[in-house]
Length: 440
Image (cartoon, rainbow, N blue to C red; front, side):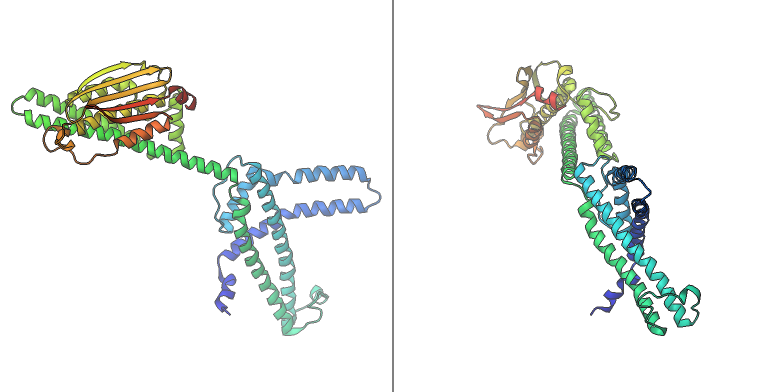
């Protein structure tokens, strides 16, 4: 037998806290018991009319059964169970479903019943312990002498004290046992219901989706800026002595690209640092719906397409652009994703094909928004890294550009085609603006 295990409830810090939790239940039970005793007395008195008392009982029962179903009571019980029983419980919802309320009401009844039993045991054990000590010390007098409660009515001296101590220790072990059982039962009755778990999973999914979206934004923006910066820096180095004006222009482009990347980086980091990530999601939804209130930096969309094309041209691309859309009328999500697809596509052209001619088409039709990029494929034998910046050093690694584009298109339930057609590499994305507008 493990002696230390038997002594654990006597020295554990959790036992007093669990005792407080149970006594709170006993205290709350007292008004219910007093009302029940009072109504029993009324029914036992023949002089009291039965009908009015019955109506009063029905009203009292209706009022008394309301508190266990209130969300505030459930929140208090969860807080008490977490603080006093060390139960592992999640933060309660402000408006829990009825499934959770019924289970919380069951917990309320269990709490009060167990608390009442422990309080009754304590109110019996403490006076009897005093009686036992009084008989051992010889100080019994008055009500101590007249105590005839079994087993004290048949015991005297030391045996009376032993029984008193055992009775008091029994209360401690009863508190420890019931408290432990309630700590295991609390997650079952006070834990999230199936509906709450579904909402929690949906919230976690939204947060993960938002983080993935922010990661894509950061990857596309910073990746584009670094590609532009690398190409412009290489061009400026080569023309620094022969064409200082061109070199200064390239350095200015590097400065602009760096500032744009820093603005996007500040925007993403600002969202990630929010205490409540849901605020970032709410602001994004509000932006899609045309609402105000987003204090963070505006996200780039088709309204900035001219600047994107200008950056690409300064990096050496020859961009033949046909933009046949009113950017202000395109829903926010589709406009942002279309911009990022174009940005990633132009960046990939610079990385893998070099300073070539690119055909860019953006048009809006009945089926949605169509985005298309076409550029020559590098000749066989020319490494993508060598064609990437025109310097012969290039950039190794192919990145995850197409995967990112597919993720963006999938979010809007659109389609993406990418592949070689004759001597051209073509990327074609279709974004359903009607679906996006409903989702926004």
